[in-house]
Image (cartoon, rainbow, N blue to C red; front, side, top):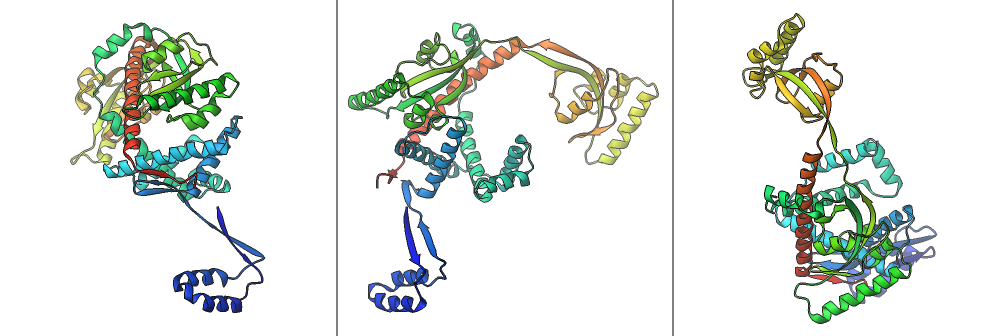
Length: 448
């Protein structure tokens, strides 16, 4: 980082002399120097000059961006009690993360993805609620840590843009078929539990030459030797891994054996928590995979409600006030002894349940939204709620019962579908990012 230093003995007279003397060296440069030199100065003043550390297509990464990102990573590693990698390795890893981020943002904007202020407001509010704070309180915490809140909001917006780009990539994939789910459920890979894994990855470029393959294999072998000599796995991932999870210590999270490539599944199947594989080759590169934890598949139980309701819809002819008065009248008739089922058939605008006397059947907790769940939570069996409003109109609901059911089979099937989707989406997003990186113009100036 370069500095301009001005001492207290500098006076306006000296400034004028310097200005006159330096006209032969260019008026623009002289005027800038004079502007700095003639400013009121305390005992000493330092002006820091930012610099470019990487060119990324039509964008740049500034030294200030890199330093801020490194500080965030270092603070997180320290809070988790981890080992901080050497500065030069950390700089290269964090810079690569920023390069990928810049490329994702460029691609998102080029393909028409946008994020509004309202989107950012919603995300910031949700983040504050997750931490048990108001937005104002969260802002105070952020600013007390020396971070600009406007910059914080900008980062949130960029995260949303990146996520929407990744989601677009995933949505472009073919839907998971029932046949694929059936095949997985019949396989041995899905009969076991789940593994919490981390990995170190060194990527191979498309069409890698034998020399490139040998070089990268040699590098992954060196990392493996450092692990064998006692190096912490997370530190090794932060220092050397080229995966998306590198700066998180390589942590991938929970996966069943089918949601990872077959070669990975075979390698980790018999590992215990804390053990890791030898380097493994895949089409994308070389990997070392660590098992952090293991858990067996368990019985899945779910709470269900049984209820019936009556809906008076609002529309061009029925105002919210009209609907409210009608539903109040219907409820009063029920309180006075009229049959709920008959009144539902006569008055309810819910085409699905009206002919069934308003019967909604058994449904899982939360299936009909937060408002319905709040009303049911305050009712005893056989009790009719007060009228309440939703987006479609006014309702009353009668709670008929609760039960706990075994939904393990349905949950396993859903987990199988999600496992296939996870495996395919991971591979597709990784392929997209590697191709985008290889096609981009990136010039690192770290060494300079």
